Amino acid sequence: MAKIQMKTPLVEMDGDEMTRIIWQQIKDILLNPYIDLKTEYYDLGLEHRNETDDQVTVDSANATLKYGVAVKCATITPNAARMTEYNLKEMWKSPNGTIRAILDGTVFRTPIIVKGIPPYVRNWTKPISIARHAYGDIYKATELKVDAGCKAELVVTDKDGNETRALIHDFKTDGIIQGVHNLEKSIQGFARSCFNYALDMKVDLWFSTKDTISKKYDHTFKDIFAEIYEAEYKAKFEEAGIEYFYTLIDDAVARVIRSEGGFIWACKNYDGDVMSDMVSTAYGSLAMMTSVLVSPDGIYEYEAAHGTVQRHYYNHLKGLPTSTNSVATIFAWTGALRKRGELDEIPELCEFADKLERACIDTIESGVMTKDLYLISTLENKTQVNTTEFLEAIASRL
Ligand code: NAP
Ligand code: MG
Image (cartoon, rainbow, N blue to C red):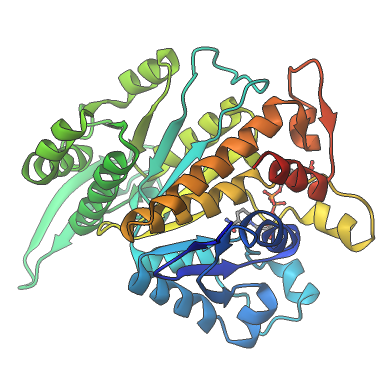
């Protein structure tokens, strides 16, 4: 059988620890035998980030802007312990943060659903993707403790030095205050990323805020979404047979729980932080959660939602067997290959991505799985396999 040919390279961002081991095995066992893989390779492993003063991360993000599609392995975000472990020159910033800042994108997390791993919410038969706005609000807040007898005001000084003041509170007893902001440009980018991704996935988009209470702040989010939808996306949504739907966050929470899934739920920064943990826990396993960064102008970076699975890596280094689930990392590859196939009109590549995803799901549904799933699967006949055996089982179905 002739290998599938690619036209444009994928931006390949290699990473750290156990996921780096899996990365190579996925290419060897599942991709290279079938595809003449064309990638522009960037080594985001911590050692190489340190050698290049993190320039490699910036270069990989710029390459993504150039080519449009990237696939990323999980990477270590350094902390004090990693400084000594890797003898780092500096505590380099999170690569995901750096890449997100350059692509100006929104992260969408989606669970992979398989029989035998039922979600805690019984009626969730289809995936719910969470889109979290990644700029501002309480994550860029200024806070103060305020003593009794103080008056707190918002003061805005315009470019000519004129002040506008608004009373926050006249404090009779001790208290606290917080100042938050957001930018119209960032909210517009968030909205476009959400509309683009909904069109891409052909699913409905829900957006929720607390606009009844926050009549200027949250209401501005609601208005920006509505304006952009009417002006740029309404016709496209109608053509695709999907819906954009705004509702108050309280109502959204109730509807999400009662729903069967199968939509994107866009949330403000804090709501998305909290709700993504709730939704991913309810679907069962972090190892079955994919993640894609979508920029407002339609650039895509695919990855797994989990980290580098450090504990498994240390066992691997000791020569002990590991049972690490590679599904989310495989789906990062299939997501990127399918997108490349769509953009470059290579239907065989899209078809390959579909078949590889099917092979992963079929393998697990036939009872062959890694330890994380084995512990929670309700299947009667199940077998626990190690990291490599699992990839080989997928290959044999593929
Ligand atoms: P983690 O790598 O996601 O792993 C946490 C635990 O979850 C593991 O110890 C394992 O549990 C389980 N797990 C996660 N993925 C799994 C998989 N594919 N198969 C089986 N079990 C899996 O998170 P972490 O240990 O907090 O972080 C490790 C490193 O990853 C850190 O340096 C962090 O900075 C980095 N990180 C990177 C990203 C990213 O690049 N996107 C995201 C998060 C964290 P058991 O040990 O109980 O088996
Ligand atoms: Mg969180």
